[in-house]
Image (cartoon, rainbow, N blue to C red; front, top):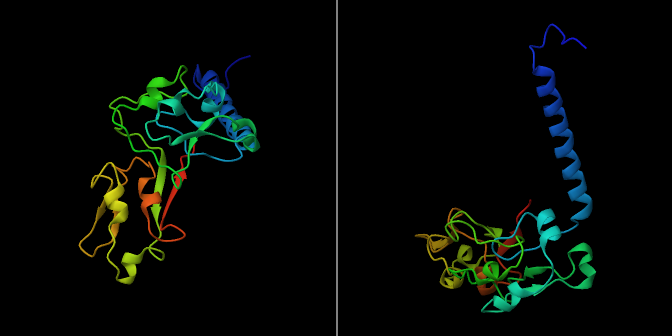
Length: 194
């Protein structure tokens, strides 16, 4: 079949690749939406959720390697994710170990130590609700900042005494979530998409 005059040679192949790429991307997104019903806070170095579910053997080695027992398996009610490791920061947060023993212990590629350790790596996304935070009602509190294992690079207190999340430094470990004195907590940690 001749190439239509408005397309230069090779463009049909490029057009097919772009259409197939868009179709495949859409298929992956729809499949993931059906398979991944809920996101969990995964241990450091976790693959994106679909890859993690496929690669994790549910061996428990990452949980055994965690020095603070922050990594626990999901219960049977978690469906396809049952038995996979996750972190519940309100119970026991990750402490952002410099050597990431959990990822080092993983026998598969489900968890890997990122290049540069914590550089550019996130477990989740942290948000502050100023309506709940006592510092916005005139009370002095530094509990979240004091608990942060990363320090001021992730969570600082501004001149008015309010917590300031520094996204470029926050690894999403959840230590501040557990330390928060409000009920419900003023800090919300959301697992990453992808």
